[in-house]
Image 1: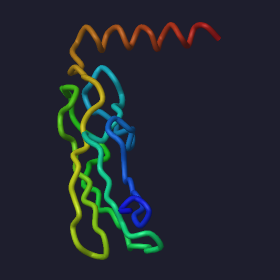
Image 2: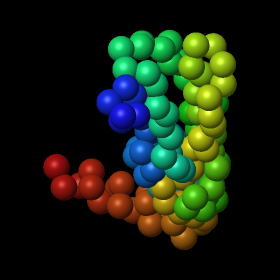
Image 3: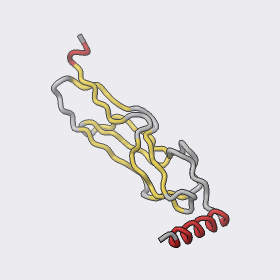
Length: 116
């Protein structure tokens, strides 16, 4: 039977958090980066393929950011050959910081210092 001679090798699951990146000029200081889709493969039982990944993503992004916006890419290699690619997407919207938001943030920071 096919299922008895193969193992399932999963790399990632849709919606899993890959990392958090800093946001420049946004009302939030960071945004979660998620995997856009599932990715996996079947390998022969008992084999141990050499699985590597190549990640292309910046440590910072500029606002505005929309949920689902592509921020990077992960490339999967099995035994040196490209197996697949998966986009890395923003987990939420981040609006651009404007003057009223900056003023509000300044007052919040100032009043939090007075609480001591």
